[in-house]
Length: 433
Image 1 (cartoon, rainbow, N blue to C red):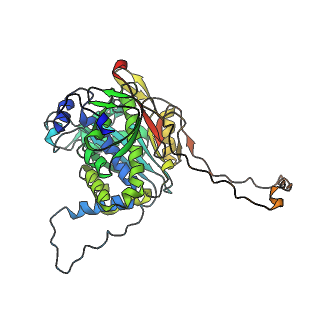
Image 2 (image 1 turned 30 degrees about the vertical axis):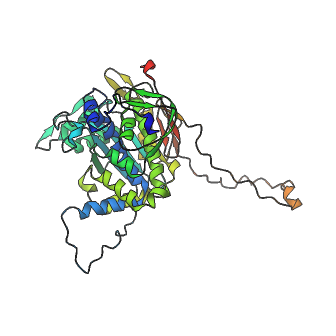
Image 3 (image 1 turned 135 degrees about the horizontal axis):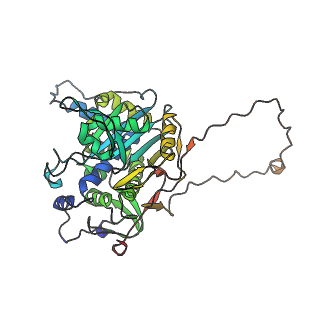
């Protein structure tokens, strides 16, 4: 448990450690925290109406100080219906330290890179959803983007996707992903990295499974095999670890963070969380305090209506997927035709079914809960044991029986898991680094 997650030096387990590690190349806390906070916007939306409605109601009411009248009662959160049709929302995590806690480093210590870019898609009938991750080092073409200070930036043929935020802000990242995927994306949110510790603590900790020992001197993360309930600083360090997971690369860190987000979704949707107003409010505040919204999304009604559209989706129908990529000099590039096939399925509003692995950063949990199958009811009726009577084959002129389409089975090169999948981190020891 938490006593097994020890920092590199005794007595260094505080926010100062975050700042110190934040200066390490490829291992800073801002990058990892931004990734998970971005995913957590989708997590909160998936969690249900109560979380999102309270969060958005709080945001609206906190715009200016209010005056409570003697004969006034607060009343319930306004009733809002589910949004009509499907939704495409881009969730971008920034590594900027501007306006963040000083413990994460000086405001001018980083640029403004979108170190996470995730697309949340909700189906037209609200029966399924997907959260699709784009690796930060994936090379893409960037279209001409408006300059927030006036004019526009020139188009570029090949740049890493995480540079789009610094070129033209959130609008440029949206334009780039629209060009890359062929999708219209009317909603977007930019997420800062402060608050991940509060978020994990708000739900009373997030259970994570470790298959093989994690050893990471850069983050001070040392976890033995087994289940650990992580919150606060411990959760932050688990999310930061790269050297101690899979092959030590960023793609396997994404696998590990999908494990965490899936567990967080299950925790949020549990009765223990949704029935506890204190947990619901604390979780909502931890996320909404770190969001910058597009004009189209900057509305209590819109945010809550998207949440309602997601609240009844089964865990197995919430898919976390990482786009298929292959190595290239200095980064990764999309693998075709699997990449285009993925977004053609999204554009066609088809349910996504994973056929590949969860990625090298995680493995299936051998102790995952198994849903019991009820035994057939006992009967003393002898007729019940007799062979069923033969039936005539349908006439050749009969119309074919309609069957429900299972959706699109994605290429094995698309890694990921559903929110209902229980997975364990594939740890990496110092000896293997």
